[in-house]
Image 1 (tube, rainbow, N blue to C red):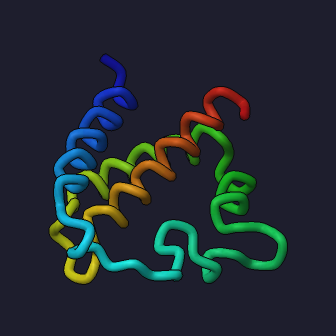
Image 2: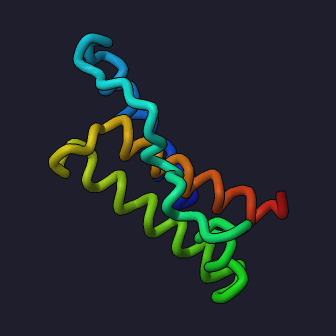
Image 3: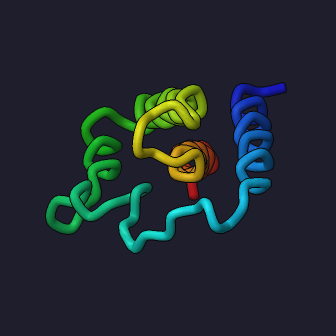
Length: 103
């Protein structure tokens, strides 16, 4: 099993646990915790600048490592919901996947 499949499996397992939580316990907010505006400078997002500076392979590794970090801290960081960390991990895994497949 590849690293990405293992990470995705862990994300899915944690998401299933989270989905069992009552909707009443979830906090709905308009703020985008996964890709907020403060990570944009001019017409480029921070990830696009990182990709230009360090290159595709380094940025893919960054995405995989960062996704791992979010999976490891699920439910442990104060004021961060499990759902927020899962969404962040998914974003990084999807970005790595897209870059590996030239999308």
